[in-house]
Image (cartoon, rainbow, N blue to C red):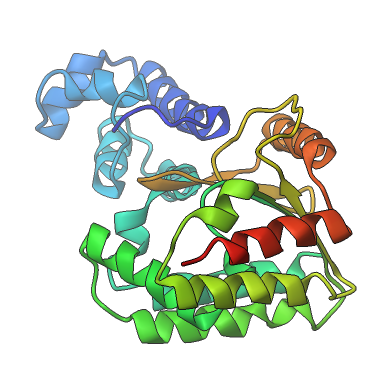
Length: 282
C-alpha cells in the first residue's frame, strides 16, 4: 500500500509498526527470526515493522505469538484498524453500493454543530437536488463498478440533508465558480440544481460563497474537503477518503478555508454568478 497523503494516517501506521518492533526487541528476536517462526517470507517482518506493509489481524496475532505477547494482540489489532480507517479506499467503502455510505454519515452530521465545506468540482452533497445526485452517483457507480443502488443512495442523501433545516447546526460552504459550470446531468438537471442553490442561500443556517474565476486569491484550488467542528476533517481523493484527526492537520485545512473565504463572494454577487451560469445553459 502506498504511503498515505495524510501525515496523521502515516504516523498512526508508523506508531503501530514501532510497537511491533518493540515486542520483537523485548523478545530478543531478529526480524528474520520472527518471519521464520511465523512461516512468512524472510522480508515480511521487516516490511511490517517499517510500516511498508500494513499488518492484517492474522499477522498481528502471529507476531504476538512468536514474541510471547499474546495478551497484547487485541490492543494492537484495534490500533491497526483505527489507523486504516483514516485512509479508506472508495472501493472498500462502496463495495456493497452507495446507500450504506450515505447513511454512515448521519451520526457525524447530527453531532456536528459547525460545518465548513469546500468543493472545487461538484455541488456539495448536502446541497444537491435529487436529479443532480442521481446523475452524479450514477457516474460514480459506473466508474467504480459498484452494485447499482443509486435510487436508494439518492434517497439516503436527501434524507441526511435535513440537518440544513433541523437542529442547531451552522454551515459555511464554499464552491469554486467552476462548480456552477461543470455539467453534471443534462441542462434541465443543471438548471434545477443551480436554482436550488439560489433557494438554499435564504436558509438562516447556511452561508454559501462562490470563489469567482477572476478572484485575486492567496490559496490555490484544492481537493474537496469538509471540517466537522474542529474535531475532524475529511478529504476526498479520486481513490480514497482521508479522515484527518491530527490537530495540526485540521488547523491547516482551517487556515486554507479562511483564505478561500477571503476570495469568495456572497449574497447578491454570488447570486449573480449563479444566475449567469443558468443563463449559459443551452
